[in-house]
Amino acid sequence: LVGQSSLFVLFTSLLTMLLYHRGKPWSAGLSLALAVTKPHLAFPLACLLLFRRQYRIVITAIVTFAVLVIAGLWIGHSDIYTYLQGVRTYAAWNSATNPRLVGIQNLTTGVLGLSPLVGSTLSLIGGLLLLGITLLLDREDRRRGRTGDALPLALLVTALAFKAHSYD
Image 1 (cartoon, rainbow, N blue to C red):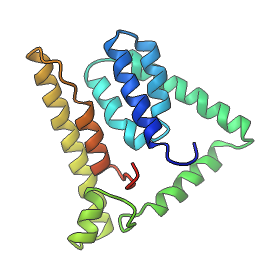
Image 2 (cartoon, rainbow, N blue to C red):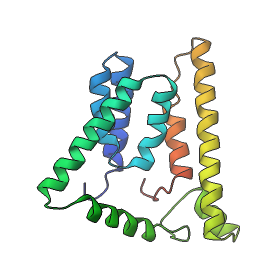
Image 3 (cartoon, helix red, strand yellow):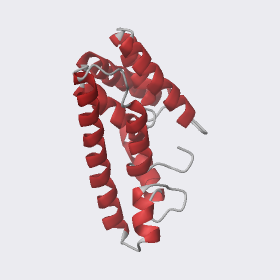
Image 4 (cartoon, helix red, strand yellow):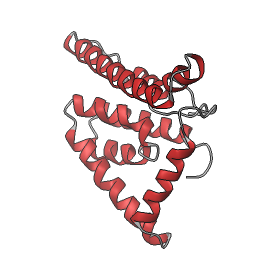
């Protein structure tokens, strides 16, 4: 995808949860596979589904995404090594000092003056802790029979902790 694909990922993430709640795991898995176009935004959703033991959805998403990647590489006359080089180049552009990034990582480097390595490490640890708390809150809500969904909180955690751009 070229351009602002964050709205597409938000749509497919919400569609994944809607299909999950309607008892359509295969369709939810297909939708989740499309959300993985931005893995840092789909990661908490996948964790939430795994935490809820929705393995069929996650496995369907992984298989579908793998098929889409292989088809995309074949259509684009490319290979996995070129793709991985592109990912490395993109990751280098997204250093902790990039002013276009938002969240814990940039706060620690830009505001607190910590090194990029420390900022990235704190961001990752903080994100995993926040995601863990989100999953525990979700389990407690479900145990008490509440219908609230942890997805909005998981999406917020993503933007704060996992190298999100300001447009994400």
